[in-house]
Length: 235
Image (cartoon, rainbow, N blue to C red; front, side, top):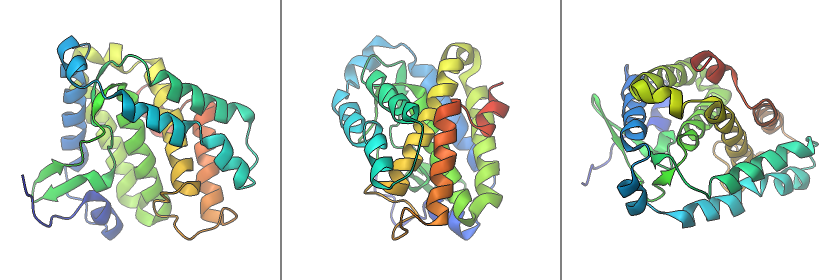
């Protein structure tokens, strides 16, 4: 479907014009997608997109250690190991259908409706990758000046995501899920600060205060296996 020139959620976050109910709609949709496709063998067969996770393992999760070293940023060796281990585990069997590229630029806003685009990374994988990915990008928007809308949006998304999981919440949103969300969130922030796709940090050297702050937060997420929003939503 050709949706025309619609604003994306990233642009609206930067402009401070996120429509009311965005977190609720997005959370309920993604939660419903994960819950309805959970452990569905037929969907798993159709969406066996192993190549995308192998690529991510090589260019994202295993790259965290080299990216930190190249930037001259000291970090516990365990941070890089945890990111790599998550990437390796994500190449294995999945739990449900995930969107695969859940960040604000993939969400188009059409009046009161949301349109989710760029599904080429969709696959039968782990739900934490969708949730951690969105949280990483909402945190980065907040860090770059959109905190007034990005933090409430993240909280609303998580609340309605868990609600939409219904009786699947205990199985999908367990302790492993929470830890994986945090590790992916940290790995995505580091990749976006120091890697080739510097979302919002383009042109800033690794020694700049914003990059150092973002990387420090990311390392904390990886090492703790948690972040404040996850802790509040998934006690």
